[in-house]
Image: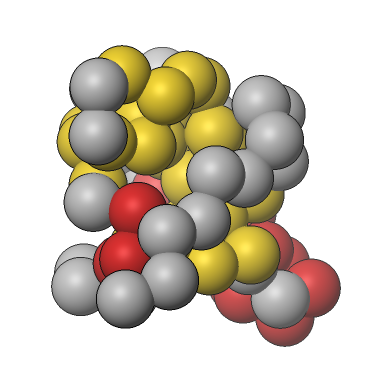
Length: 74
């Protein structure tokens, strides 16, 4: 399996959950992602991470903006 270590601050896709997050760090064997707009970080094995496409980034940002407008997130 190809281990990926995306740069800090980049956008990545967790292919196991199809969630886009911002790369916050590399802890042990894991890549730490944080959801767009803040939230709880989660650990992802490197083989399950790839760079998020522009469309995936826009989709995640739109989903966050919609949830925020409904008052579901701060």
